[in-house]
Image (cartoon, rainbow, N blue to C red; front, side):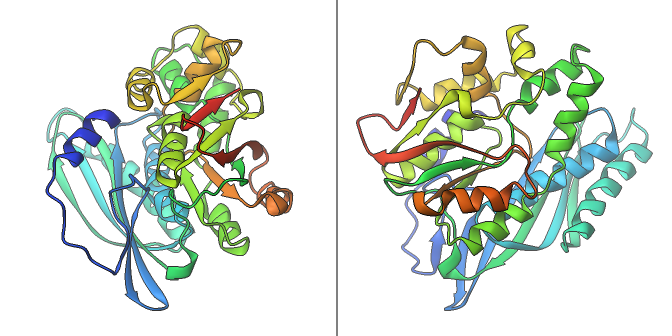
Length: 328
């Protein structure tokens, strides 16, 4: 469902009793929940699943697994277990397809030290797949979307554009090279980013997924009560993504993400409409948006580029200036 509809539903729920051990709940729309078990240990929990975005079922399973695990890494946590969630039709699609999807997901779990402990399946005409993931973290090392501070530098670890390229693949408008680049970035784990966040004592971060760069940046800004300035020309983009946006290879997320952010931003009028579409473009297994103290940003960027070649400094956090986002 759209982020604005989801926010409306969650906003109508009765307030829960205060729990001092709940470090991060759903009130700030963060990537995962964090619950303190003891003074030196907390549980990280998340769930995510979605429809196929690539043609190869094995790759779909791998991407779905990374997309789910990334929410734990976005909190700087270490994922430990996963439960599979699948919607699959009883008739019309060979079960070998589901086997390949699950084999791809299990490959990623095994590569990242995550143990599959079970799951749940539902008969559905629409195929969907993903995982509920549990991780661990020290309570003092949590990176939350409420942790950005004025003066912080913003680093994005991966290029954007997977949404428009997935649409281009669907309508046979994306080239093989563009599809391969999008698949490669989706299959790059967020584990190294989580390790770097712990190493550099990061407290503010989020991953960029369905709400797009601007949607998740808006959540980071709103939860942290700061304004984020994003320099559009510094944002790394996948090859071919701008051209596909110009050819209207947009998902419905382009519209709903704009509605979600609403008027709580200012965009320089010289920025092209194609670039703006990419900034709203929903991502799958996207990169981390990290807020780090300015004097440590270059060192962290160098560390991140060991794994994420296109990682870039894309802006900064400043004192709240009347709008949560400013795009220049």
